[in-house]
Length: 359
Ligand code: ADP
Ligand code: MG
Image (cartoon, rainbow, N blue to C red; front, side, top):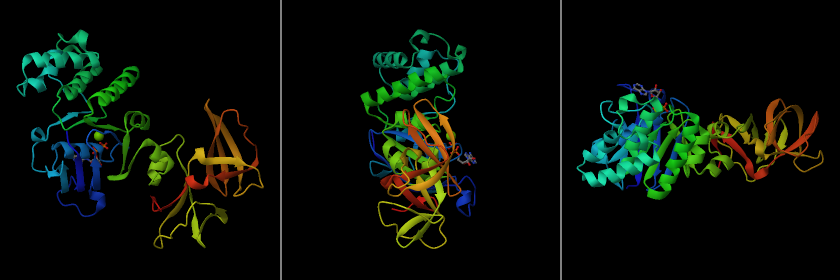
C-alpha cells in the first residue's frame, strides 16, 4: 500500500496547448493517504478518468509528478505501480469461465492455485457470482460482466490502490446499492486505499470518508462530507452538493461588512476585500436560512413565492431583493406566507470571489 501524492499535475490531450482551456487537467495538487476511502466526484467531462489514468500509468501527464510513498513513479509502467483499476464498462475474457476471469490476475503473478481458489471463492461470494463460477463469461448480462470486472479489481491483495471508474453505471439500481455497501464493508476490512469515481453525490457521500470534488479540470475541494456541506470552498461545491444546493447571490463589500442590494448581511469574520474587479457572491445553504420575527437581529425581508413538500422537509422558495433564496424548513414547523423575514446563520454564510471562498 502507498501514500499517493500528485504534484502540479497538468494534462492536455492537444499537441501544443496554449492556455488553460486546452488542458483537461488544469492544475492538480493532491494527497491520497494510505488506506483512505475516497470518492472522486464531478460532472461528466471534468477530468476524472484522465486523473485516474495518470495515477495508474495508462496516461503520461503533460506536466507534474506522481509520487508513491515519496518516490516518483512517472516512468513506471502500470504493472510496476501495482494498481487495480475497474473501468466504467466491463472488460472480461468472454471465452473464459467466470472462475478463470477472477483467477486471471493472480495466475498472471504466479500465485499458488490453492491460494487462488480461496481468494476467488471469497471474491465470488462478495460479488454474488458464486452460482456462476463455472459459466462462460460470454453468457452473462452486462451487470454480470461488470461484477466480474469488479471482482478482478478486488482479487489481488498486493495492490497500492484500487480505483473504480463509475463502476456501477451498467448495474441495476437495487444491486448498485448492495455492491456499494459491500465495497465499503470491504474497505473497512482490508483498508486498501480505494478511489471511487462518480458523478453522483449520494454515491460519493455514502462510500467515502473523504471526497475530492472536481470541476472543469480543477480540484475545487477535498474534505469530509461534513466539510463540503458546512464550508464549500468553491461555489461549484455549494451548488453541486446538497439538495437543493447553496443559495448564491451577488454581494458587495463595504466598511468591513457585506451587503446584498443595500441589506447588511452578518458574517462571523472580517472579509478582506479581494483584488478589484473580482466577482463577489454571498452563499448560504437552504438548511441555514431560518424564518424569524421581523424585529429579530439580522432579519432580512423576503417574499415567500412557493413551497414544495419533500416529506421530511419543506423547500420554501423566497424572493430576497430580487434574488431567489430557498429555505429548508423541517416538517412540523409552519411556513409563513407573503412578506416574511429570514436570517442567514452567521457562521454558515460565506463570501466568494470569482467562485473561491474568501477565508
Ligand atoms: P470525466 O471522466 O470526468 O468524464 P475525462 O477525463 O474523460 O472526464 O475528460 C476530460 C476532458 O478531456 C473532456 O473534455 C474530454 O472530452 C477530454 N478527453 C478525454 N479523453 C480524451 C482523449 N483521449 N482525447 C482527447 N480529449 C479527451
Ligand atoms: Mg470518465
